Image (cartoon, rainbow, N blue to C red; front, top):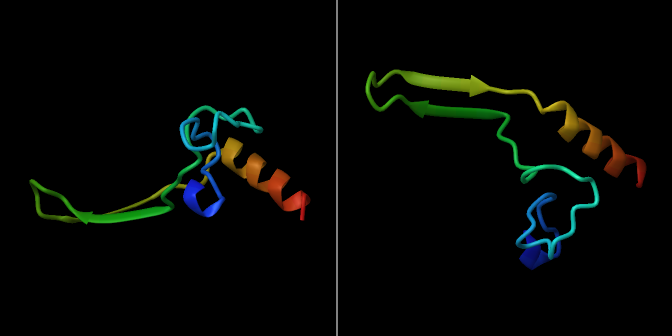
Length: 65
């Protein structure tokens, strides 16, 4: 993402140390994951909402538009 001018927020390596929102860790999130369990062979489907801090950063970014 940094290569195309949009580094991941919280990625200290590729954002040249910038972390304007003070988050810990990279702001990457998978809303849904599906995979076949390696032992049971059962199809797994997991969903997770965005963490609150993630929503807060998104709201700040939207308010800049």
